[in-house]
Image (cartoon, rainbow, N blue to C red; front, side, top):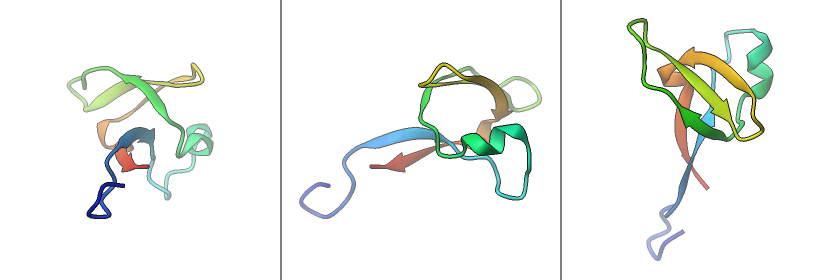
Length: 66
């Protein structure tokens, strides 16, 4: 946090919608290592810091303060 109480650092995490049940929903909150550019359907390839690879909607990767 900076002097104004605002988070000074962010991290990118995988956050699929809670209403979507899939094997990947167990990975919610996992830190992201890298993301590809979105394809025509709005999907991105995501690599998590543990090496897991998955395809997700671009909006499923979000910045969170820490």
